Length: 115
Ligand SMILES: [Zn+2]
Image (spheres, helix red, strand yellow):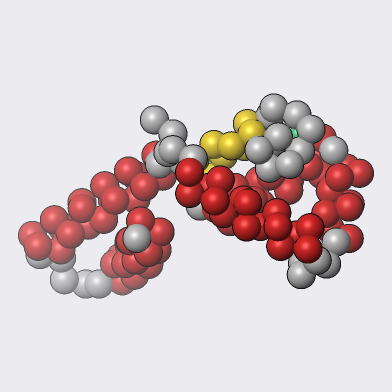
């Protein structure tokens, strides 16, 4: 739900400067939207490289599961290039990748948000 709210907030905030008429209600709405954006960005989740199947304890964060996965990939490329190459070479529907993706989604759901 948070993700959709944030997307909505970002889209609305982008469109709003184009509106010519700004009444108190719109101002109030903008403030609420801004607060939504700020609070949402504070709710990050952090997992370790080893939780993602990697060999070290580097902390990897993201606002969404996709973002964390992308940041994990960036870390793999920088710190464990051989693993990154193996992951990229594996077909997405291979049993290993399917299993990984299932586990990752469970781990993401079970990881508490950062304080
Ligand atoms: Zn690592």
